[in-house]
Length: 209
Figure 1: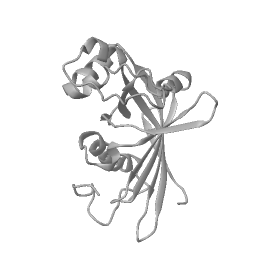
Figure 2 (figure 1 turned 90 degrees about the vertical axis):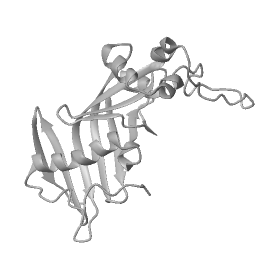
Figure 3 (figure 1 turned 135 degrees about the horizontal axis):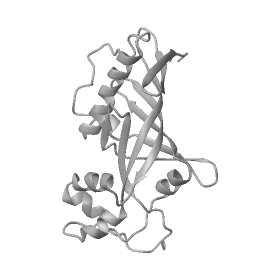
Figure 4 (figure 1 turned 180 degrees about the vertical axis):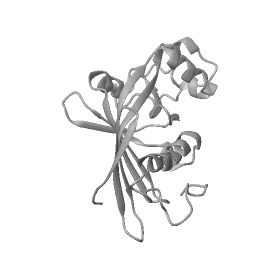
């Protein structure tokens, strides 16, 4: 359980008015903003799914580092050598799964990813990290690379490190939201809605839970 109060008061009403797509989007943004700004919030740790090289799905947990409401943009950081970067370079489509057990709100978010490596966007994201986070990217261990079963475990590097090496391994992934499938479990009746965008215009439809 988290050590902060749920985003909403009870009863949960994120999907209160399904005739109002702009208002519904605004309410859902409260959870995404909380995830990006509050380390203990459940939306801080979404599951990211990508298309693997064999055409099947692959999923892992990432840290939501930033959310831009106006740009509909979710940002996470990763090692540029990781499989998720390889997947997204081949197919930029991805899905985030968020779930808040306290508010009983699930969001499945489809997005298109842009990988920023060694550019101004990546540099700004890297500079905003505390030194111990930047240091972890200096690791010589390649994520997912097969190692000997008796190889010693290597602890993440600690500062000071050569930050040119860290930045060389660092990638910021910016994902633009295209569709949200939101499900809210509620005593008065479960609610589910799909939000989709046509340019800047958001449309909403109610679907069965």
